[in-house]
Length: 229
Image 1 (cartoon, one colour):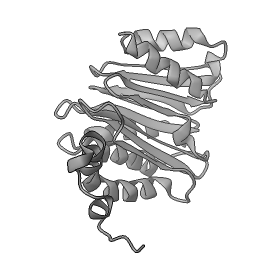
Image 2 (image 1 turned 90 degrees about the vertical axis):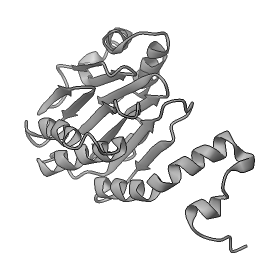
Image 3 (image 1 turned 30 degrees about the vertical axis):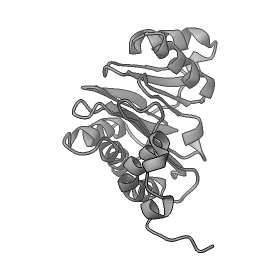
Image 4 (image 1 turned 180 degrees about the vertical axis):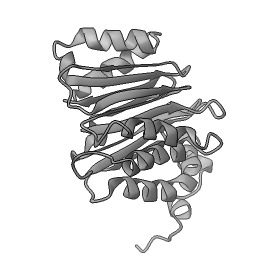
């Protein structure tokens, strides 16, 4: 009961993913992003260990298709899994097991893949990819959230959404500077959009605090407030 999108921005070199679901705190279980490596999505009857395995396989130099095969071969429960892999070069691969709840499916674009299971109808996944591809000049995070918004507008899931997440890696940064989660909300995609709007102007400054702390701005300057104690 999850729909998601993984994509690469050829203009900036960023890659990442966004997910939404009717389950609580899915951002801790579904999306895996490895800086310099790629993205792994593991959903339906989710096994987070498969996401971690996928990143390790990408780290060895395996491409998206090879990594997906490695993940499937690692588990006796693949029939219950829906998986997708995006490697750092924008190649994608996906798998949907026979036991995964319908409606289910995937759509592949240029450097992007959308997947969904137990969604409201067969139009949802196509709408997600269309939302991602609509504004290629926009920031990757905006495009990923727009993809979720279009999926929701097309029907979303059969059950009310409860959680959503966004993760984006940037070139040359050995951690994920955009890693936002809404663990439980009545409108998690809208809440994710709001959090991203707040976080977007702070990303560069917080990266600077990690890489050059002596010369980086104070947190209260970044956040736009003063300490009260």
